[in-house]
Length: 102
Image (tube, rainbow, N blue to C red; front, side, top):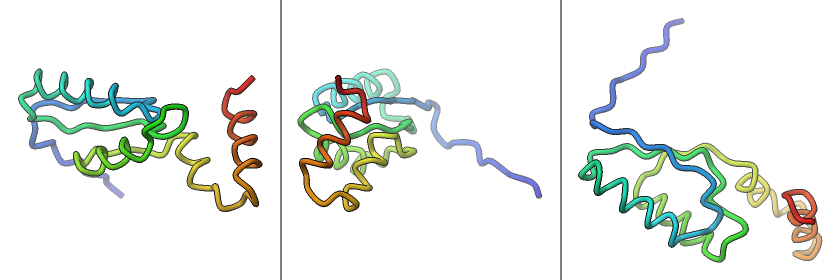
């Protein structure tokens, strides 16, 4: 089996990571990327769009709007699995204890 990878039709590729609900930071980085690349760029993310910051929903929407290609980070994965907890308190405790809270 041969894997063929198509050459990107853009001049630049950018990687971002660990956004954690920080829409202001993401917007600032996107603006800097666009300034350098003149929007001739494919943006990839190594995940962790959500958690910690106040704007996880807005971060996800911007990533969708900009067609950012991403893998699921550990924080994203935990949020996708919220249904297994019976209360938000249990989920909050799980995130706090399991994702770096002290």
